[in-house]
Length: 189
Length: 256
Image (cartoon, rainbow over all chains, first blue to last red; front, side):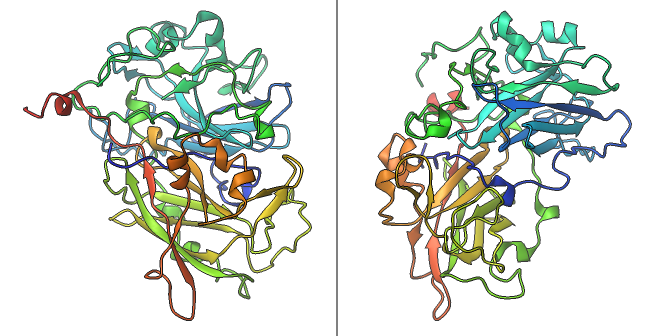
């Protein structure tokens, strides 16, 4: 390492000045066939909503590809942005409209179940926190996922988006809890 | 390279990356703030309490969004000319390079900034500091780095402002910076500070970075060579993102 890294600092309470994009939450146009919506609340340790968080997602395309030169399988331009950015609203709710990602070869062998990588920034977070979103209806793939396997079984549910009862098809929900007792699993990447 | 693994490591999923997959170095201790920094009161209910679980760098982590060019215009890098009149305050040029820790420039990457106006007031509904808004300043800028990783903004020097963290708490003058790099692992949001600010000593956000040398890397440098005569002061601020981890190949002495 030749150069020291620039440290992280909090996004602060005024991120709305610079960061939200009008189309940020829409990884794809909501009218796209197969589009899904993932929504949920960001909650603090008192169970109160966090109205000044920024939730960002990054994921593979439905066929498991990335339009990126560092994908060792080769970059494939499907016109899929892969990136979502949603500021939370006054009720702490984020919302991402996207396509379901494909499964991926895992770095240690095996297969990673379909997932999104998630970054949460907020006032009160001096560094980003990283988590993942998996899908409850991918039971077999989730059972074989090496990252989920590294998470204590009783905490895995904090990473798995569910279909709300009576919800629209393609509608998924996952709350992000920053602190105990049902704290979301966060990763050191 | 050490072979010891932290206690939070899960089952055998943290070995060397497969051949041909890039991997990114882990930040040294003391560079990034501890999430639980009680001196900064907002961390009390928001900082996770459990240790993070080690995530092997897979395809989702070694790739990342390469976007921005389609949503940035040259005018977005000049925060002083976007309104009918000129903003009040001290006009400044802020420029530098985005690099990785190996010293390689990060080209064509989106840089987003936001800041208070010269009076220390943000153009945001929740800012109730009784200082004037400036109708000619919104405080947001963006640009792409060039092929050498360079970026350049023209703005005004933000004012210091009070906040309610502790009695008589004031934030040092700063500009927020958001960076993507080329991989999910490189994503960074930071704040750029100005040299010699007397408010550093009482600011728990600045001081949340444990390593004093790392703290200094958040302070820009005044540069007369960047200063434009009769027009604007120049400040240089280089930003360093995580670079490639030392590979087994390099550690073994470099024979292929």
